[in-house]
Amino acid sequence: MNFEKEKSEVAATMKRLYDRGLTTASGGNVSMRIKDGILITASQTDKGLIDASQVGLIDQDGKVMSGDLKLSMETGMHLAIYAKRPDINAIVHAHPVFATSFAISGKIIKTNLAGESRAVLGEPAFAEYALMGTQHLADLVAGASLKSNAVLMRNHGVITLGSSLFQAYDRMEVLEASAKMTFITEFLGGSHDLTVEQLKEIDNLFI
Image (cartoon, rainbow, N blue to C red; front, side):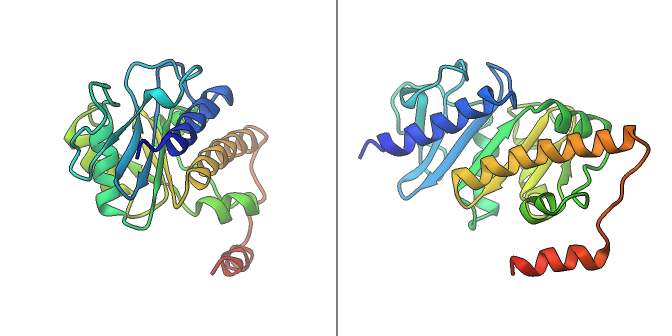
């Protein structure tokens, strides 16, 4: 099988990230777990123009199954996360300005300001800095992914996980929106946070 439909979905998600201003033309990567391995975006592609031909296939051990296509330098990070999280089938990595700024500053993105943030994200986790494309970074982010489906990568960007491409993408959008709400409410002088009881009510809706 050539998985053209699935490759198109991965490419469309990557392009959507760019179109929504959640990453730059050269930044970010998207992957999806399928029965035969993992589909992942190629390296050095224009994220605003990416299509299915720029999505490659690797097996669970990282062996390239898609000819001479050069895959994302963060392929090892995706593999490490999938190994730790058998419950997820999609990973989105991007560099949204507000959420990445929180990752750089080490400040918490509040997800207790609105019901959607709590329901979609829970509490984001942090991964300390490591050089991009390294096994060290892969190990740090994979470890942090055990705590949350949204990980802030220090001085780098953010990564979100999901059972589907849409869920992983949605978490990226909601994470950036939550970062904006956190920043704006602090600028305005503070926020009226949801109470512990209100947060429990939201959590119980999705048990």
